[in-house]
Image (cartoon, rainbow over all chains, first blue to last red; front, top):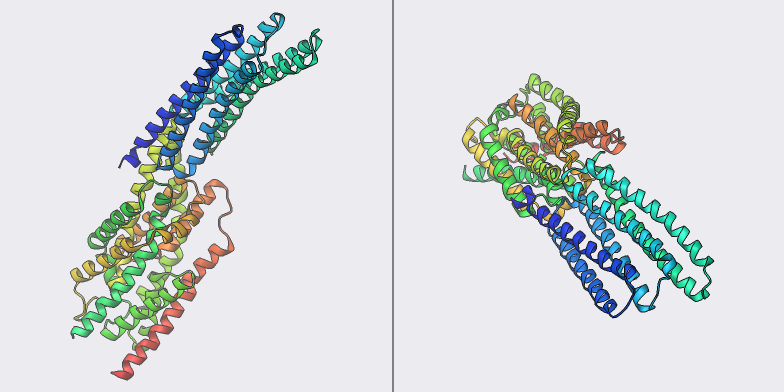
Length: 212
Length: 314
């Protein structure tokens, strides 16, 4: 009877929330690496990033197992699995950003730190909108549509910041190798918003199917 | 006399079992495939409700079936055995068949030889067969529009999921009950009267045989047959089952057994019309026409052969 009244769905929806919270922690922790100069604290922050990312992975795996054990109609299970995997990729990308800074011992020039922060904030806002979109998807998917548009808006804003940033980096009087490192960082930060947008595209498909 | 009784029970059970076995997947397939209900739970609940339908609502069709031609042991056995043979052969070769149309064809075939065929009843049944697919189309079409009005207002994925689950599960139960009520007459109708089965015996034996068919329906069959239906969304397939169940129940009230397969095909076509999809394909038409023409003709021929053999052997 629990199959009929959605007991398993509630558990999966809870796992979705926990997963989103953990992905949020990965993003917040990585942000610290951009805002602060990388010193001894860096190791601890990166350690936290890895731990949160790994916890997000394990929540995702649990949610997938629950889905395969009967949560959601079999026909919509694929969409839900695709969605949680897409959200997980946001965390993976944030971890990559942390790696780019930490493993390459990357120092962001003071003149461009604000722009990196701004770009990261755009990705963070895109993720927050994605969070709201997923939260609303289960309870009021009409509200989700607005959040999906919000993700797209922040992704576009981030793209603009990213392009300016790369142009500025290549106008700097620094070594080409460093320019390439800084360009990669800008691209990876932009990718966080791109991944959030990919996940929101999946939400859009789910909503379209529901309205058919 | 004992051999006659055993033969009657065997033939009725064979017909009832194959009816339940073949229809279990059609009725519960979408719910099982969508993981709304577990396979074993579906077979048990379906069996309970098909039996309940047969026992509580199956009596009205019995008199129709036993009025097609005068009931004798030879007529009943040759018709039922002829139908069972055709159904088993056609199911084995995956050819579309209908027990309802088979048994009526067989009774008419033997009735033509024996004499005393009730053409009024035959005409009434033939007319209902023509109406069934169109009636199911109309019921499914209207139901879909009406239920969608409510369903489309639900903006919560969580509530929608529970709604579809409950709808699919309860409509499958409803269709099981309707199938039992409508199709019982096919299983034991030919044996009613003239010192053969009594009404209560007919209800019990027929209901139990159909329930046995539901209980023994294999998971593989449910998945194979059910997949053909679940190309539709769970919401649509649930309404399609509701349309078929309502057609079956309506005709059971007026005492005319109809083909469950044609009710399902008609119902699915009705959903197709709402969705604007061209579901009425040549294959679908072939299924309907086979049910109307080929099945009664083939069962009539085989039943007549069995009847002649029984006459010759005395």
